[in-house]
Length: 241
Image (cartoon, rainbow, N blue to C red; front, top):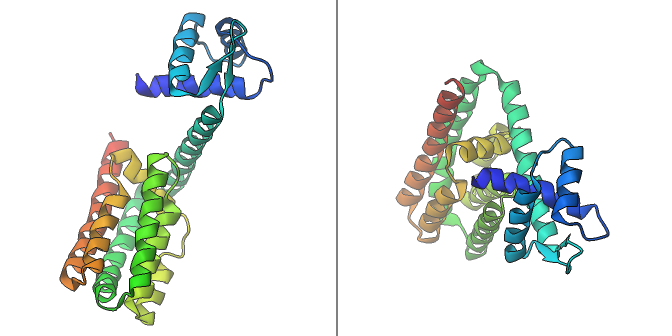
């Protein structure tokens, strides 16, 4: 039901966004039907009442509803989620069934390099670099809560660790592995489908680095990368069913 209700809210908000005048349940239902979306007038009325309570729409007497600024923000979030899922599907289609091993090989290589980078970062990171990592995680949490893409936050976090490690050779090796800009969005998509969150693993890594715990930072990074490998395995098992 929640997924279906969100779809209904998206369709109704899309109708209201394009109108200057308020619209009632009957008109909205007709406009949706004209666009190939069948939602009864009664259902539209119930959804509108819920959206009024959420502050997404505003009732204008007997004239109907208009979209609010909060409704516009929600509509933007709906579109971002749709864009992310569409992109993820399209890119994963290009991988093909034989590409799972390639993705896992990349993660295995990252595990070998980033475990050492995390250990070195726990020794060499400055307070300013740790604050930057904290800032990135806060932004990632916010983007995740708003159903926005957080792949760029993932890249920034791991890049900050590489810089903080103060080892140019290992840092360059990581850059080489991660030069494909589609890797992080793909992993984000996979983790979304299997119900995992990148930010959880990042938090453990940061805690160890900030605590100047090299062993803990290394283990947290190993666990983080291995959880990514597990999620890739889970995703391929799901799509093959």
